[in-house]
Image (cartoon, rainbow, N blue to C red; front, side, top):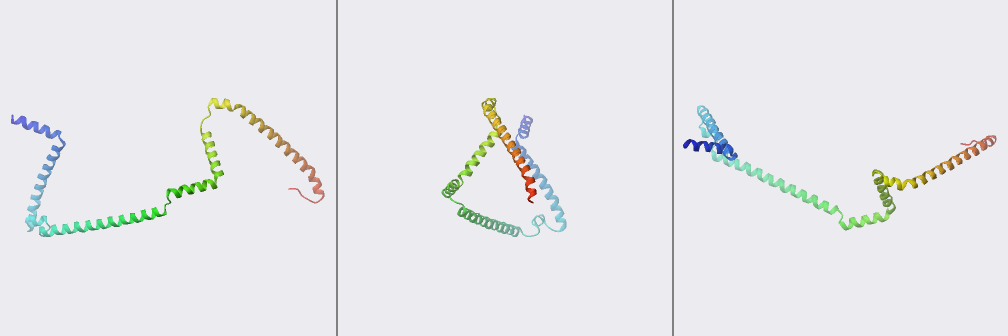
Length: 190
């Protein structure tokens, strides 16, 4: 029966993380105690007691007082740095708030600029709409709806091209006729 209880305890301990942690701590304590005994034996050979060897030769009260003083100084320096940083942050925030316009000022500025540059805003909106339209794919229904307008636009472009071609040809002909007359008078045409 005693074996059964011991087996149950081992099984519970191996399944519980808390129990495993306690067992590890106990094992660490035993190893530490053994190491301390070995160190104490060596220090006794050097002429110091185990207690003195652990404290570095100084009395325990002095070492504790020195450790408290160092901790107190570090805490004081940390508090001073935190207060200094807090003051710097507050100062920066105050400057930022002073430089930052209020919501009413921002709204008024936007309205002024919008009124001054209304044409620019409208052109920008049209450009954004056109860019969005170019990015979206064209559906078959849109192609069918736009086919007559596209055909008319192509006809108009052809007519404009023909007219431009005719005017260029006419200008070339006039220029060619005026060139010999200008050369006879000593002028050059560029």
